[in-house]
Length: 454
Image 1 (cartoon, helix red, strand yellow):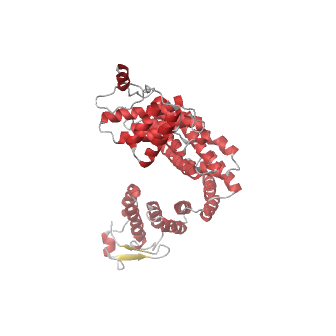
Image 2 (cartoon, rainbow, N blue to C red):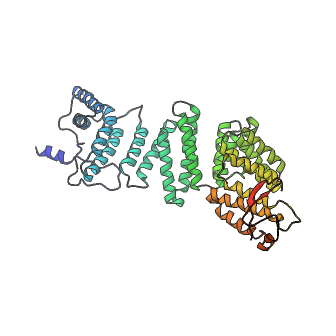
Image 3 (cartoon, rainbow, N blue to C red):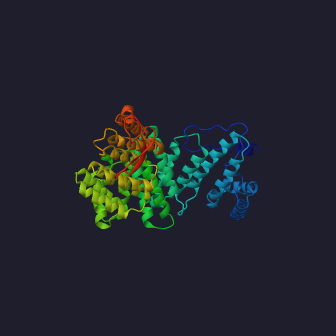
C-alpha cells in the first residue's frame, strides 16, 4: 500500500531538458505517468486502445483518459495511437483545467508525452524529427509567456534539418518566424543565424513547390511570405544579397521561375541597382520576356544613362505586365523619364494614365504639378503668365489630400510656388481675372483653377 501511495504522489514528471524543474504545486490535477503496478497484456492493451480511440471520436474525454492512461503507463511502446490520441486527451484536460496550477502540470505532461514517444516508439513514418516538430509547435501553444521560445526554436531546427523537404510547410514558416524574432531581439547575436535559416527555409520551400504535390501551392505562397519577412527585417544589405545570389543566378540562367523569384526579392530589398539583379533580368528576358525582366533592363539602361533604351524597355514592361499596381509603377517611371527630358506634356500624359489605376498615388500629382509649373503661357502678360502656378499648387494640394506620405514634399512645393503668384495689385488692374474666381488654363494643360494672389 505504501508503494502504491508513493507511485501516486510521483505523477508529474517535468519536461526533459527544461531549464528549471517545476515543482508540483498544491491543487494541480495529477497526470499519472508512472509505470502501472501490474503490466497489461497485449489483449488488454488492444481492448483499451480500441476503447480510448472510440471515446476520443465521440468526445467522451473522461472515458478516453481512463482507458488511455493505463496503456501509456504500462506499455508506452505498444501503439502510436497512445501518442496521437494522448496529445488530444491531455489538451482537453488542459483546456478545461480548474486551476492555473493544474494547467502548469498538464502542459509539462504534454511535453513529456513527446519525449516518451521518441524514447519508446520507433515509427518509420513519423521519425524523431517529426515528433520534435510537433513538440516545438506545442511548446509555442502551451508556453505563450516565453516570447523568444528558444526551446521551440531548437526543436524545430532539429526537425527541419532532419526532415528536409518532408517538413510540413507550417513548421517551416513557424521556424523562420522564431528565427526572425530572435534576430529582432539581438541583431548582432542572431544576424548570421537568421540569414542561414532564411536560406535553408526558402531553399526547402522552393524544392517543395517545384516537386508538385498537395503542398506545392502552399509552399509557393509561404516562400513569398518568407521573402517579404526577410526583406522587411533589414538583415542583409545589397552587397550581402549579391554574395548570396550571384552564383545562384549564374547557375540558373535557364530557370525562369527561380530567376523571377530572385528578382522580386531584390525589388523588395530595394537592390535593383545591383549587377546580379540585372544579370537575372537579362537571362529571363532572353528566355521569355516578362514585365519584371523588361523593367530590370530598363533600370540597367538608366544606370548607363541610356534614356532611349530605358523608355523602350519600360514600354515593353507595360505590354507584358499583368498586375495593375505594377503597371501604374511603370507608367509613373516613364513619366519621370519624360520629365527629365523636359517633355512635360508626355510626362503628364503618363502620370494621368497611372492615376486611372492608382488614383491615390500622390507622386503622380506632384509630378504633374512640377510639369505645369514649367509651362510657358502668355509670356508677355505679368498676370496670365503666372496662372500655371495656380494649377501647379492645385496638384500639390491634391497630392497631400489623397496620399499623406507626400504631405511634406507637397507643402514645400506649395510654399515655393506661392511666391510666384501675381500680387493683389496686379490682379486688381487686370481685366480678365478676379481674385477668388475660376480661371481656365488652356493649351496642353487644359485645367480650370482659382485665381489667387501671393
